Image 1 (cartoon, rainbow, N blue to C red):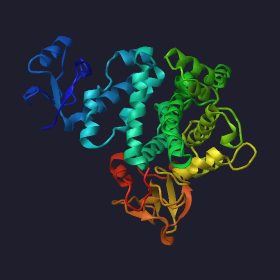
Image 2 (cartoon, one colour; image 1 turned 30 degrees about the horizontal axis):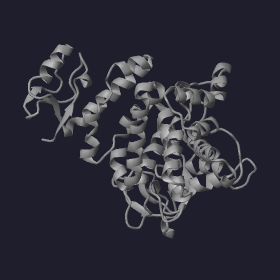
Image 3 (cartoon, rainbow, N blue to C red; image 1 turned 135 degrees about the horizontal axis):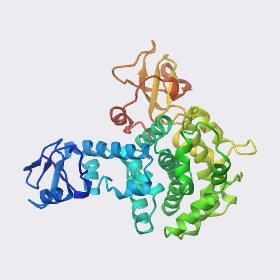
Length: 409
C-alpha cells in the first residue's frame, strides 16, 4: 500500500468519505462512505497514530469528490470567498499522487488556477501562481504534446472554469514559441508565461460568465471588457507584482501593433506574442452565441497581422505548436477521422490517433498514424462539434508521449 498523508481540513464534514482513512501504519480508521459528523471526530482520528493517510490508488476519488463539490458550489452561485474558505482544495500532500502515478489531473489543475485567478490574496498569491506555473513548466518539459492535447481539448469542450483554462493554454503556447522558435532567454520566457497566466485577472469572473450567456455583453459588461487590462495591472500591483515588464505586457496585451518584434520594447514583444496566442485560444472556445472554430482556422487568424501580412509572433506560434495541434481533429486521406496526439517533424504532418473509422464508427483501438505518409495525409481540420465521440484524456494522453521520431520540447 502506497500511503499518502492528507490534511484534516481536506475531510468534508457531513459527507460520505470518498476513500478509506488509515493511520501511518495502514490500520483502518474509517471506511469509505463513512460519514464524519464533526471536526472533533476528524481530529480524533488524526491524533490516534501519526495523522491521516490514504492509499495512493484512492487519490483520484478524493480529487473527484473535491471537484464535484466545487462545481456544485459554483452552480449554486456561492461566492468565491465561500469556496475558498470551505477548505475543500486538494492539499499538497494529496497532489503527490501525480508524482507517484506520473499523471497530472488536469481538472485538478484547472480548479487550482480557477481559484487563483478569481480569488487572489496578497499573502498567498505569489506562492499559488508559482505553483501553477511550476506544474505547467514541468509538464511542458516532460511532454509538451500532452499539455497541448489536454488544454486544447478542454478549451474546445468545456465552459466551466473557462478563464483559467484559456490562461493556461495561452501561457503554454507563448512558452513554446519563446523557447523553441524565438530562442528567448529563460528569464524572459518565465515573465512571458506569467504575464499570459495573469493577463485577464481583471475580468476572470465575467469571462467565465460570458461563455454561458445567451446574449451579447451589455453596456456594463462591455466596459469591463474594454478596461480589463488596466484592471488586471491594478490587481497584480495589489498582489505585490512589481516587475515593470510583466505589468506593461499585461497592460498592452490587446494592443494591435504589427511589425517586427525587434522593433519593439521588451514588454511590447511579450505583449505581441500574448495577443496572438490569446486570439488563437479564444476562437477555440465554445459560446452559447457561437460554436468554436477549428484550430487550423484559429491559427490562420493569428498568422496574419492587421495589415494582412505575415505576423512574426503568429508565425512563431504556428511553428511551435503546428498547423494541426495536439487535441484537434483531422480528416485523413484514408477517410478516417483522427485526433492529433503529437506534433510531427514539420507543422503539417502530426502523429494522429484514429477515433472514427472509414464508416464513421468509433474505433475500439486508437491506431496511431503518421500523416507524413501519403495514405494518411491530412485533408482538413474537423470541428470538435462534428466528432460525435467521447474523448477520454486518461486513455489518449499516453499516446502523446514523444518518440525518437518526434521533435523534443
